[in-house]
Length: 152
Ligand code: FES
Image (cartoon, rainbow, N blue to C red):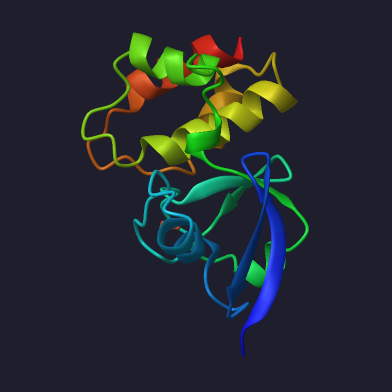
């Protein structure tokens, strides 16, 4: 049965009239046309679908929209402010951290949370955090360099 789910998306109040069991990923992409968040594996393994829920990196393919009622969801579309890229986005550009780019929104959302929570993270901590994201192009060195610049 449909329910009305109220949440904030990128700082704006939104409501979704939908089955609360639908994946957050589908609701973001199909109902709100926020297609920067990607479907990779659909099983919580690859990280392509990562968004922030109350600041915490969350795999939106295995999170139902019903679970995020009342929270603040941030997607890649919400990062740039006033035409200015977020520092993490700029770092990914500076280090050529995109090849095909498909996995990058997920990487960036996790890196945004890391930069905020642990601004002095060591390289090992960064590797541990970012290794939960898969990049099929294997552009890991550039991604790590970007995250290191953004975090430190
Ligand atoms: Fe969600 Fe892969 S699509 S973790």
